[in-house]
Length: 250
Image (tube, rainbow, N blue to C red; front, side, top):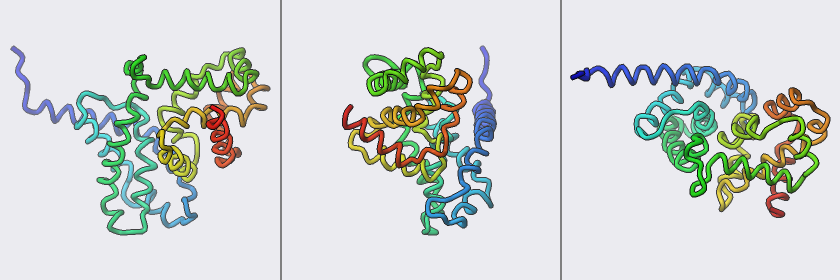
């Protein structure tokens, strides 16, 4: 009989922490860049997040504790990107007391949010009874065909599949597509909707429609780059206005 060492759980924890470290570090620069301007234009708030303590360690700990308290689930790359905006808000709060509890408050909010969006990270949880990311992708394709059939046909013709870009868009709630202040404004809209994330596919559809001219003229490589590096020149206000219009027509 193979005996289990009392040290095995510790070794497992160290391996997991190392994996989280490597995964997060591959994205940490994104948030350093995205923190180039703050929500209120206060550069001191940004420095509190970027400088001083390596804040990626906070996010690493949150992911680690989340994994250990949800043994039936597994860490999926991209979860760190969902944590970052939440942690940013708590870590830059004007109240010193709130900032001291930023890590615990972030974990609490992230844990609650993941109860709603975790199926978006796992394909096998997608089925007719509990539609997950697959259902969201299909809905996005349906919406685009309904509101702009010509653009939808063009994307199909050049072979740009919705999975090439929208899996990331939908599963991460567009956290990687915009600068941090815009992510916060977008999330405020999504979270305040009484139907929660029902508007998200309409936002994604609006994003495509607003770069219609570029996509219509693009070949496959150009189109892939365009949707995976969404143009920062498109104002979030225009995206939300278009999305709300589509949503009302929806």
